[in-house]
Image (tube, rainbow, N blue to C red; front, side, top):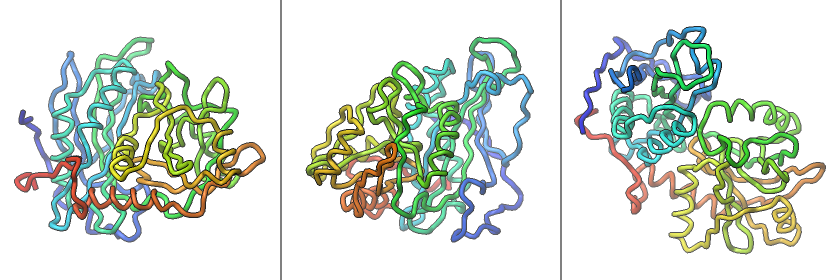
Length: 355
């Protein structure tokens, strides 16, 4: 189905002023944005416009009741300069899964993908050419109905903005296993990519960073011993030649990179098990020498290699090298840049006629 997306372009792009070798993280935005409105029970007026401030009523329900969800994606280019998206259909489906949990309307998945393709085609010049860099894409939906009262909103906006980005982590990272605060509980909103989940993580992350760590390693809400995920990532451990990752239980985000890494590891001959993992198990594996490596996975970070985990007053040493994680990262980046054959058909190329 072809969607009629109107496009209004800026007279002069700001991309000429950007130094791709020095991109301020999360502070540089492209010239345009995709917008679609939900009114009277349907999505309408999909359009690409110059990036601008959004008029917001002080009573907009997202500001008071938190009906706000988002996705994170990246656009890259191959050797011929063709823009590419990585598994955008999965992001479209996950956005709607989040919408279901948060009492929000589903967004048409075909329009989600088409809007991305059209926006990336317009903003192709903003895709960084450097290795490990990409054009970060942020689709999000929020309730903009002005109303004070506890019910589902009736009007929403769906928007996509874009920001060129370099590599997220350039060094091995240290995690702090949080035993006081929690990220999510079974039956809560942990599996949704809801804005409030990230707001609740800000303070614990600041405390972890003040102790010299890079991210929080979240533990379960009941016993504070079962590993869930990291602040911006899912997590994998290699123990005695086999990989384990926490089983999804309704409190863990269904990461697109996570599912892709599972497929790649299995394709490369590794056994991967999704199951409950305790922090004590990781501590024991470190002590007896069977913990070989660990890494986080996510759209923004790609693959982040884990050096140590702080747990109370102890430091659990993971590893100084991550050979499998490095290989998986290179394979993923190769697929996303067209250098490695896409045997899984994960890549969606932007047609030349759009560009």
